[in-house]
Image (cartoon, rainbow, N blue to C red; front, side, top):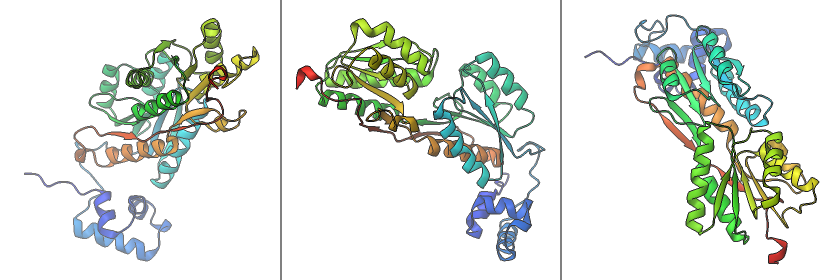
Length: 334
């Protein structure tokens, strides 16, 4: 039986330091103190750590770069996500190569194909590729998927079910009886999960809910959604993301709809702008920076010790509802 290969995480535990410190001790010894360097080297010797892993277990050349795919960098949600990735990558001494696919599947394919040979792994935060395409990609390079689960791949997702459950309960508590879920992009896994969770929660509370869309995940998409619903407005809308919610909200206010007196609006993500509009947008808070960090840390573990993670790791991060000024009882119910 072959002996399990020792990794930098084993050395870090033995030496009582962070994995990033072990990495620096070997690659840039001048950036750690003499005492720390000696401690790491002693731990490595005790464990029999080798820096020259066999080619069958690792790529023969490391770039110390990670490819980061985002669906739309102009969306503040992705900016906060990337900020968390950058923190983790800096600590682990990896450089990020940003791939903005502008919600275009063809561009995404081209960008990923170009990146495969110049990065050590990929984080896909808003991919529109099929499950089959993603499984083919992970045979070539380590991959972590965010906001989606794919059989056979590592993933990090928010707990959509808990967030939507809180949102529906909040609307029920305010006496709002009709709800519409304003959907996001076509073929979005997270959109499907949010709708499923909202539908299940509404059924639990005995509330009718309908789905309307899909719409582009932008302010313009939200404005379009309002125009299509303005003649049959429900008591409340839950939008795929904050940008759609902003568009819907502004379009409603523009024609004199009182919020929340005549219409309640809920978003998803809690981007920074959500706190600045009027009394603030009621929204489901997603742990963007934490999710970005978790994805990069998981990817680096997969890169540096592939044999230790033979099965995919799925993680779900907690979310919560943040009630603000765009939800409340209707005027005719007061």
